[in-house]
Image 1 (cartoon, rainbow, N blue to C red):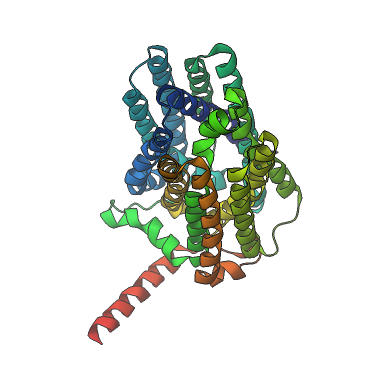
Image 2 (cartoon, helix red, strand yellow):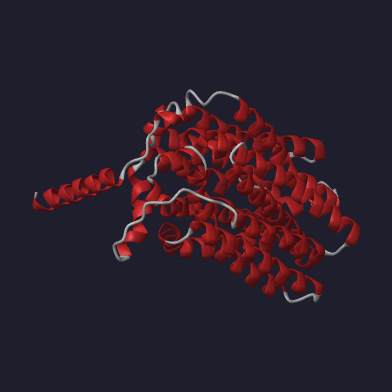
Length: 423
């Protein structure tokens, strides 16, 4: 926080995160109130995820070749404009398909926002402070994710007007876009060669070669894809726990309360000595928490299970983000971060779709509990399939591959394929 660049970044990040958390809480409640169908909650995740998957490769390439600061600012303003459109749709009681269309637009904006933010962060402060900065950033996100849903739930309870929440989101996101203009990142070494189609795949190729990164992303993708319960929180709040919109805000905030406390602890403690084992155990505990939450009919037990799940999930978040950035050369960070965003969106948003689909077929309790057991199975699979991840120790011991290393690896792979064909 002694770095002026990071203070501007933190302000923009907190404002945007708080607004988008408020938006997610309000739109989930509004759609479920109007339709009463948990499958629609799953469709919300699908509407957000598909644009990110479709636009990942061109978005990462643009971030690596363009001005990351301007892209970040423009996309934050884009979130604000989408929120204003949602406010108009809510105020006028527009058809449900309008809300889904605007969620698709939001997903398009997200596909460019996440790579620009993630790729620029390492250039805002000295490399020695990066791991600590990730822990702080995680803490800021958890703070925003606690306050945002609580504010949204309070507004929904007292005013019964989701459009007010969307207007607040718009103000926060546009403010974040303005703050991003004050950032002064270090210059990034960029190639002067004309763009080629193959350039878009270099980030994915880099992650495929770095087995520790691939293992960490695979673990997060599959664990949250099966074990996510966030999409079904409106169902639990209304039909199972009977706690209403304020209770919904508390349920959405609970994982982030645990994650915030964990982030404070991680920012103050020494770095991980056995990062691989810490990552695997944290995801296993997350799966157990989902099983407990799924069976619970007590609001307090549900809140406790979600809080613990958020705390252990934050360990996974910090390790994964540090690993991706430290093992990626600067000129590839936009494309690698874009691929990372696909894993995140697939796990969170497609996980929401999977949860809604299973809940519509077999009920919300079966959806959450079976997902928790699925997460435990995923931990065992990844531990066996990626021994390099299981053996990983200190994160700061890893060094980013250079572009020369990448080219050398590509030549070796091509030579192996040629020899295999001749054989």
